Length: 295
Image 1 (tube, helix red, strand yellow):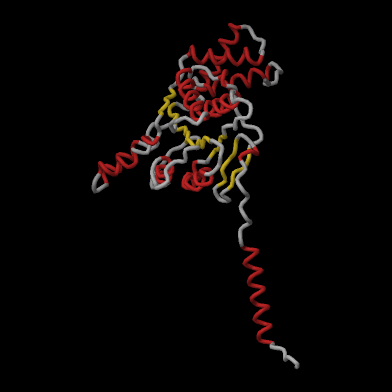
Image 2 (cartoon, helix red, strand yellow):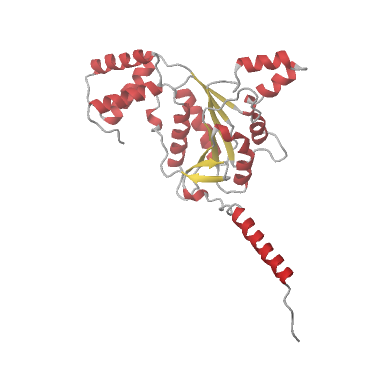
């Protein structure tokens, strides 16, 4: 029995195959399984919903951070408790620029891992960029089922104008049906204690039907952080102590009186004394002395 060809059917089949092939090419590649054993630190890429491992973290040793003893100890204790599986708070490090807020987070993370016992899982540090805060719930969802404990860290966090991504942060930290995963804490640095500029808060009061409630919703964002650690402009003595600490650590040979005069002049020309200013001076000094900053 012979079968006659069906040109229309074959054409339809060919068209469907072409459509399926095109859709396959347009489909995003399958997301890789979460592997937090790949590194101790990661960067969250919101567009791809992926964590990129960081082979070497840009940080300084905890012992080199001077003039922040109280906040250093508080942050270290909170981090150590969290690493041990005990209750711990989200932390907001706020205050003066250049005083080592982000450096302290990275240094405490490294110091905590150095004190892990053999066989214990390392504490993970995951950086999320300010512009990706609205993807924080998706990141938290990925981390929830993972056996590792992780600090999710956002540097220079603040909100301006009509930015509503703070609502995603509130939901991820404290609200929502699921709430914050037990294996995750959120650390953030900011120049503002309430994460919002004063004029934005005053504008809410003047334009809202119920000003008190509108301002309360935004100010309450800071309440999601159980620890507020303040960083203030350092004194001359603190600044010089930072300089002395770096000089001793890196073995820079310079007369103490000359070092003091030189370091103070450096700060004066920049109009500020801070940990960042001290580190920039040390880089300049080491370059002039032909010394590499290692160790």
